[in-house]
Structure formats: C-alpha cells, structure tokens
Image (spheres, rainbow, N blue to C red):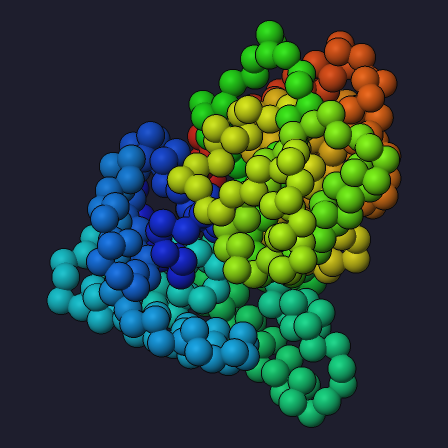
Length: 393
C-alpha cells in the first residue's frame, strides 16, 4: 500500500536554511520511492506562496500575519509563534477531506497540530529532527535565577510530553537519540536514526577539474553557532591578508546580511578576493565551483543539529573540507587526512589553509581526499537510502 505522509514545518518554504534543506531532501527522495507526500508551511505573503508542488508533493501554504518581528525577546516571540502557527494549521485543514498514514512534525514547534490531526485520522505521528531543548535552555540561561529555573522546568515538562506522545522519533544524530533515552527514558522502539543527507545527483566529482584555490563558506544568521563561525572565517581572512597570502578567491553566502556585524560586512566587501552574496536560489552551483570548503565552528557547544548539512554537502560534492571537529559533528565516518582535514580551531585552520594555498599538498593527495569524501556520502548519506526508515513505521 502506498504510504501517505503529511509533513508540517514551521519555516517558509522559500527560505534557504538547514531545516528546509532536510525537508526538501526527504520529500524528493520519498516521492521517488513512490510515497504520497504533502507539506504544510507558514506563509506571510502571496508572493512567497508561488510554489504549489515540489517533485510531486503538494505544498500547503498556511497564510499568517507576521506579527512577531517587533517582539525583541526571542523566547517570547517563539512561544507566541508556536501557538499561532499550530492554531493556523488546524484552521487551514478544518473541513478538508484528509487521508494520511503518517503526520510528521518537523522539530517540536508544529507538534501540537500534528498530534491533533493524527488523532483525528487515526494516523501515526512522527517527530522529526528534534532539538535538545533542555540543553539549549541550559546553554542560554546559565545563571541561577527563579525565572530561569521556571523556564527550564516548563521546557523539560513540554519536551517530555512531546516525546511521550510521538509514535516515532527520527533523530538526525546519535547524540540526540542518546539524550532522549537518558533524560526521558524513551523506548528504543520509538527511535529511528535518520541523518541529514544529500541528493548525490546534484553534485558530480570532476576528476579533471583543476584545483584553483576557490574557497566556499556559507552561514545562516543570526543562529549563534553560525555567527561564531563567520567571525572565525573573518579572522582567517585577516591573517591571510596580513601575511600577503592572496592567491585565492572565496565566495561567502550569508542568508540575511542585516545580521552581520557591520565591521565584518564592510571589510569583507572591501577585500578583492571575497565575493559576498546574500540568499541565493541554490548553493549547488557555488559549492560546485569551489575547491575548498571551510567549516570553522567553535568548540564547546552542547548541541548538534545532526550530521551537519554543510559538511555533508561539501563532502558529497568532493571538495577539500577543512573543518573543526564541531564542523563535522554527527557525521559518522569522517577521518582526518582520509576524507577531510581536521583542524583544532580557527588558528589551526588558518595554518592548514595557508599550507594548501602554498601547494604543500600534492595533487594526488588532494584528489584522494576528495574521492574518499564523495564515497562516504554516497554510502551513508544519500537521501534515497535515508528514507528507507519509513518502511519500518
């Protein structure tokens, strides 16, 4: 019997962010496997509601008013948005004839609507790619105050209730799965491993492509890990400039440049080696043109977003990836000097990048790393293999 799935995501469909990359990758692969897929997303203008179908999947644009931008306290904004979006989704589908076997909530925010729709339809409810909220709150609210303790207590109760209500939980990282089991005693029967992946057909490894020191970096702001990575990239480029190492070009893509620190934005625009771009229709052609991808993520973050999409894309495209351990967090199978180059921090990355730019790595060494990177993704991180998880639910 053909599996019928309704996915609910809390981000507009046209945004170029990690969650949408995951959602679109899953949708395309599921449709290619013969599943019937529909997706509900918020939409704040008719202009952004133009895409009604994606690889055979129907897109439901749930029209909403963007009333929360003036609220400057993120946690307050999120609480109001979650309530508003869930109510809007239920209102959108009210009175419609629905036939679904699975209702899938992308992360926790749309779960309330997904759970209620699943109960109405006697369908199973899937929680996909949950964030470890308790860890996030601990990281953000590390001062011991009455208010912070109340927020942490509320978040833990909410998180526990969501995990308990879900029929299945798809985790994009083993860390998340272990977290759920240890903190909330979630049964192994519920948990499935569904890492972030790549449509490998989007990229091809061109063995004849000449290595021309073209570098690529992209970041979605204002997320704090990405902001830290941008600042580290800036320090790397300043160090190269101070040493007159200028035999490279770099494409830097930032989804919302308004969140960039002004001094960094202005200085990057003034560097002749830098092409600074805002949101683009697709990252694929920019990654494809590059030789090197930098992932200068910070140490010490408690969270993981699963196998990092940036790393999987770069590895799958057969690029020479220079990354800290955090940059490849959750990517099982990476090996230093085998399929990527491991860097201790931004300073170590600067040194290794400058060695590459100076020609200290042989062409054959670089090609071997690139081949191995591509092979890793083909074997472990192809969306067409990842969606086989649906056969067990």
